[in-house]
Image 1 (cartoon, one colour):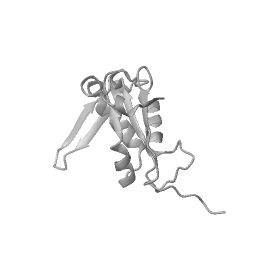
Image 2 (cartoon, one colour; image 1 turned 45 degrees about the vertical axis):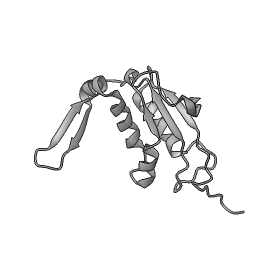
Image 3 (cartoon, helix red, strand yellow; image 1 turned 135 degrees about the horizontal axis):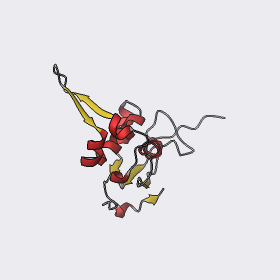
Length: 140
């Protein structure tokens, strides 16, 4: 008996909606990363892009547990001397909650071309409305 290997061309991709309101940011990001990667499918193949599309709504109402709002920072470096930029998660969630959710999901995807391709299928919205109703997304 041979092992089944999925092919990216034959995969039929569905759309899923995840509501992040009053849920921990990490748990929402894990659910989204698993769907983007395709790990929920029985024909999951690690080296093939077999994930699906994910829409996350109510990103501004996502909850960070503990003292993460005060103690957690988003850091990036410009590459120049003294070029470290820090943003506290309290200000990040207040100004750009979509970015906070995207960063959480991106960190849970593989850091290679498969992860980059999967990340393009993530759509994040701060409010309850999204503009992907034509794709008939499934509520998760």
